[in-house]
Image (cartoon, rainbow, N blue to C red):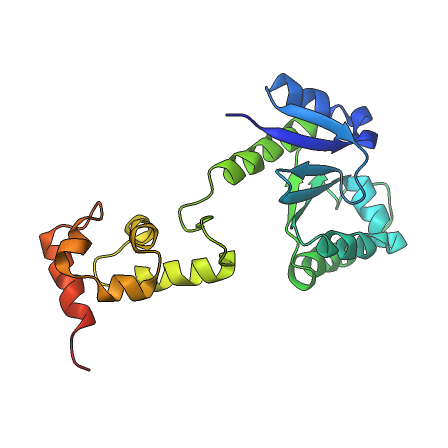
Length: 210
């Protein structure tokens, strides 16, 4: 699996780019306008030590960074190395909890804690692998927004006898909910996992009078 991660030049001193390279990740060093790492042009990651994270709360810089991350239009992630509740800064735990909630809920940017640079590197690799092999409920084909695709997938799952994997195969085969509804039994059976009984059940379900 070929993984490419762009790292900001300032991250060289952290040792993470070297760790990534040792794990067969192609690392490209360049100056990033926002964030510390970029994955597949789709995920931007801001990495902070626990001390840096707390300092950014005290200075107010944290929320400026959140605004910049959101403006990229990319999936954003903040990784905090270490325990932000145990630093040399004198700050109330409630203030840290409030900042974490604000970032996650108000700014809708997930915050993940790691135990150190090794753990951070592994988290980035996992994020890269998920981009290369997205969960089955995210369909990358076509131009529909991912949110709409998820809604379609969840709707299909509510049909009798349909689970997440089969819902994905039905949508991939027919391309739309309308085509699934209009399909005859012979067409439904062509989808892997849809036998005669399930096809009949679906066909009759769509045609039952309310």
